Length: 362
Image (cartoon, rainbow, N blue to C red; front, side, top):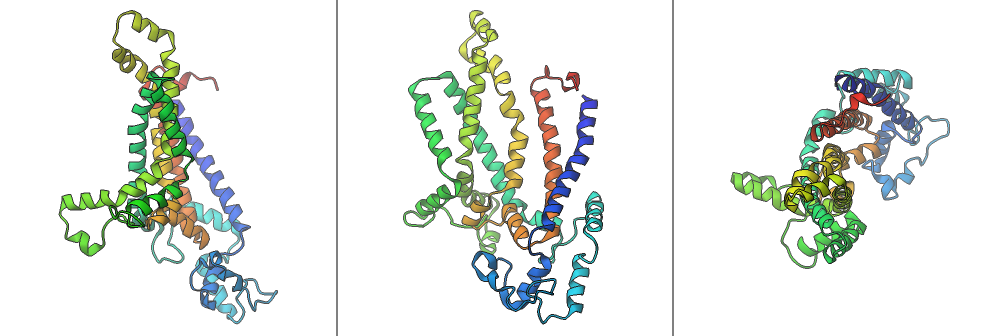
């Protein structure tokens, strides 16, 4: 097992390097950049999201063909050169890439171009929202889907199985953002009941500081209820059906028939023999599922409920061409994702010691 772990750890470096190279090259061909964003703001465009409301179409008005940056007409060349030095664009792309990777190897991710805050501090600032959505969505999905999938496997073909399958398919077919809007309309004062708040992770600061510890916990869960439900609703289908099919495969095997022939109760057969084998693929995938929800975030869910998490951070950094945030978070999340994939493989061995990656043929 030690040799297998060493091989997987060694593969992390070229894999992560490949991810960074591909994204860095792609960015070089994307129109616009941080300098253009600064110029757009100086030209009166306001924020960097003008392209979404049609305002960005006027950025290059008055630009001359000979100018390197559209919209830079009237700006002194010395100012443009200063911007290039500040952003590091006075160096060739290859040199910039290797300089960036050297800094990332020392976990120096620099500072955001437009927020005057380090990338690490910016990510830490957004973590509470992503932790809340990722942790509770994953836990609720597993806590509901696993028992439901087991019961569907035991009652395969019954009315219960058919009815729950219909509900799961309907839930899976509903887009998360549409369900989120429905929750707001029904339960957040849209048109019917004002039961839950419509925005934010907690109450305003002045109200939050006056609450007791239990009051803060209750306030937190009060605010996070609707976003978590909206982001979890579609996750039930895949996990429930995966659990059901895994258990059905195990229930039909010879060792289950032997256990029943020995007189063991159905509960003992199910949870004493079938459970470990049936849950192998479901439980072993938990780390990857959690990290996927945690770091992927949900831009639409965060926007609808006015939550400022990693999903919106990634979107805004991409639109604003905030390269330190883009590549810094890509490096960290890519590294964590690769390590978690290794951890997921080790989970298989922990759940079922009969699995040995060391004996596989290479």
